Image (cartoon, rainbow, N blue to C red; front, top):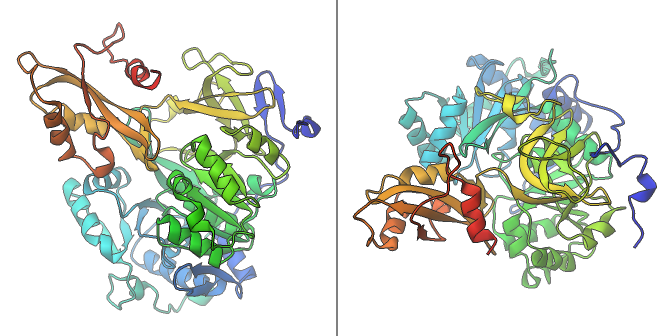
Length: 540
């Protein structure tokens, strides 16, 4: 097979064991994300921006602009400033995008939580963000109130209904005298954070990731340079995940339309994709696992150009299955991080490699440099040598919210991803493992530290850790490895499992059970060696 990257060897190249994406042709968004959105809405005012994938209700760019102006003005009237954080908690609806764009019109930071999260999880995230105002779907109001109460936080709750009550979105959407003359503020510092995402750090607990609208715009522009467009785009996730913003931004850059599909059911989601002739969809591990011939046989995916699967590496057999079911579609493993957006990608020209190198995530996207380093020494590694993936771009995160950021960059300014991987001889990247202790269950980050906190409250346990072990359908299951206190040697493992499972969320349950060891391996300093424990179960 001919190497499709060889003709571009002067563009995608390896130099001093660093792999360079092709140069960016231009940059956009210097006036700010909100101003870019505003100009796109003016340009495309009569075109449909979004359509509900289940009901067919639609909205033009122009009408959405009017609604976003009104909400932005009302937020300012209520004292929301550039220094504040505004919360969104909503399933994917036609209203969900309004707070996203409205906050960017006034250069305020937006953060999101997902309605399916537990009170405990949301309480932790809200304590990090401390939002001044929140736009909350009606079904999640009690979730947010309970989470605020745990930390004694106060926040103005705006219920996302169209009632006239002053604490409802409908009130915000009333006509404003100033709306005809309103324009978003031009940002003095266009790299100022506009979004606050949440991700799991190396310590295992979520951190607030500050990300600028400028970074989102140019990360998407980089992928556009490879030929990716979202003439009709959709995303599976809510705005809690960065992928929702990435697809929305991609639609804007493409002057396209977004199909809003408020479900995670694979069958329903796939049917809406077919009905509205989606051209680009960002989905998940669970979507790829669930897609089958029974679902696709009566549907038409001839218009689907790109199916991006993010969050986790899909097993090869399911990837092959998806590509057979969608023969006209580029089915791609999307490697990226909330901290850096898209990082690698195959293109239509290099897709033959994707078909041959099933677990490969492709070469760097334009404007990106990747190197592989030894996690302990930061020594540069060569071809087929596994180490930590480190990335340099102009659109990585601004930093962690109210937390130290110095440790996530190396001395040369590369972002340390916490992922292990390697490059092959064709400059294609493979992601093989995670340095981070966190793992994923059905696309959700699971924090071992949170489960361990509960586990160690059991009276029989002297010490213990929680690790993730691979599962063919759910990605990873939680397994506890414990050392028992003297006198408790006869305790039933099921009792420990029940104790923990009654006190954690569904995704944190010990589905892989409990293993009792006499002692846990430790470093000379006394730190438990989790990777060594995990290897005992992974590498059997």
